Length: 377
Image (cartoon, rainbow, N blue to C red; front, top):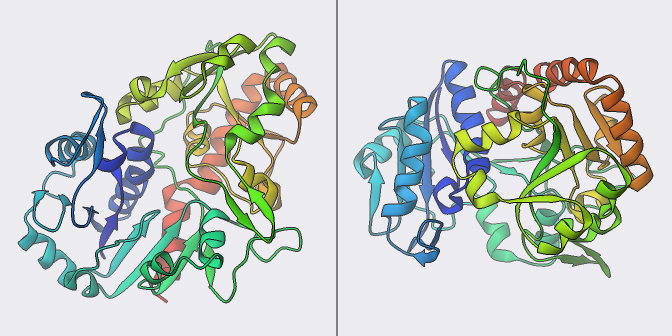
């Protein structure tokens, strides 16, 4: 099959987001498909230049970032970064030819806001929602532009695994959401033999975007949930390192904070940060916790594949994912402390279990064929 993946690597400019797309690109290629990357910014490209620390509408910075992320993995001449008037990477003529023969156009996380004639040419179009709850609340609140943008897809996927469950208040309102999982390209994320790492770590944003309100209930970001775990380093001998752009006061509570825009700038740097960690300590967005939609992180699967156990806040994922070995979930501070003790008491076993979970539940060879089968029905 010929597949086009549309996304936001250049507009992010950070290694974690690049990997979120690379998992699909590499995975589809390893399955034998002809895969291309498309980033369409609409009328103009407005991007934060991390090097100059300023906003830019020039294509040079984001296009070079996409190139440097994708071409080392063998995607030369298989990507395009475009606006209405300009483009970089493969030519527009080649893009249109690819669209004409494409079987599938996948929009991950970001709709193609400026819909162009060539995007009607692939046989099928799908949208993958990576912010379950936020997306559906936005639609329910009457965001017609967003709703119309994703209606261009014949099939809708989400990382929310529990929509429709009695304790999951996410409104579907007639929208047919199909569950999918975050994939990991196991060929690129190998089991790390070294077990001497000292820090549990995470890569996070204190506040990713605005909170949403539905039926009088506010659903928020990580800053809300993190409050109850603020003193974790003081109550444990375990060391913690977080890559983030966020408040300095976390240092006063014993957290080691490193600048996320530097230590995870490139795909290689992001991978190195994860694989040099002892495990992941993951606080979820308040929305994921309150809705219990069964969300699981595309970052966590990278830790698992590397043989790094994950200690993560409960979002209802235990309904579809075995917890207790490799993945330990917690609901409160006492649960987080108990989880740390459990992992550290039998670290080797948890490391092996983490890799097995990645192989059995998140490997691209498991996730992507199911996605394709469902997309092309």
